Amino acid sequence: MKPSGHTVLSDSPIPFTKKFKRTVNMGDGANVGVTSYAAGTVKVEVLVDDKVVKSEVFSGNEIISGSVTFPFI
Image (cartoon, rainbow, N blue to C red; front, side, top):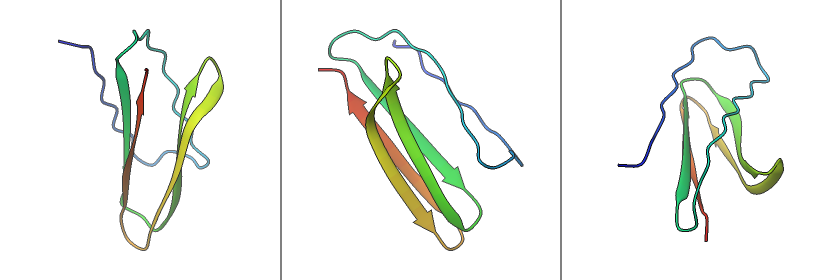
């Protein structure tokens, strides 16, 4: 089984950044999901070697939810 992680944060100061490091192999994938129970906009970025390889913006009036997937191929 591949390692995975799950982080839950409440009342984080804005703007908010969460970084983590993971060693990946060819064929692996990364999926980053976000849920916010507040109106606004959330930007999710996947960085590889400190370079943005995927970026998505999610917005909502009450709940914001989305996910970004990046395959290492």
